Length: 335
Image 1 (cartoon, one colour):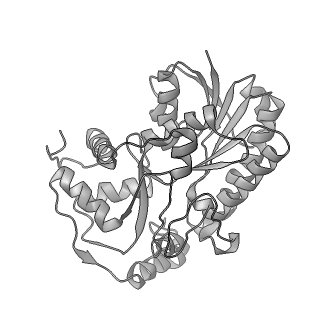
Image 2: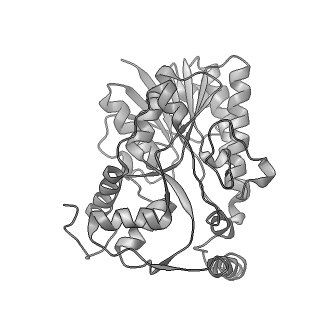
Image 3: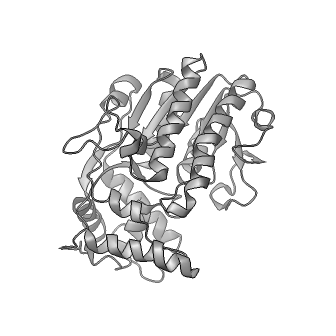
């Protein structure tokens, strides 16, 4: 039986990773902060270890393992969270890699993001493309870039480290939810009368976690692999959701200055008045770009074979419905 140490298991990708590892017969030990919501791990036959990415005794908590799957990250685009984002994502990754090395772990798979690669304006980016770090929008994207530098440095020093770069996953166990999951929830509850012009690469979360296992089995140390599927405008994505659920997709497109102004007021004014901001300036700036990516390398080298995106849409909407995200409002289109 293979053994894995998993960070971020209570989160979206991590919860799906835990389930796939267990289904594949792995023994799983998951690092969970004492303050984390653990509902995503309830009922799973795994060992939970309380701790933090920056714990000095992390190597002892990892113990002898075949693999570390480092999926934890502090995900926030609010500028007030910048210091915490860097501490968790960069310093935390450095500590996880050092702890895995000290514990004698065979191979570490680091969950980066296409956020670290950046956006190829007017084109589709692959693993060979890299935006300058100063051109990456927001602290979160820059933190993932610098965390990748830590992973690459560890691999260059001889440690077995493979990097995977998921695009925009959708699917079950998106409890928070993620920004893309929130789009689906708002669409299904009638709270999205208009959209902005943006584009995303959408991939099912089950495919993302399968890509992690393929990276462990077949990936080359020191290389990164984009785990993505379809490049879609936001309008096209919501039309696909409409086709699945019968809900009408929004037709109105708002100019970019409108949400940007709302985000500026939310983050700069309301936050100073003690209110929790709901819209960040950097997330709106990101939405002004089409974030399109090519996953051919993962398909060719890892055997990555993502399923039709409609399956992931159905799984995501079904999970949100079953877990009460739509309130009393229900549709039977996907049941």
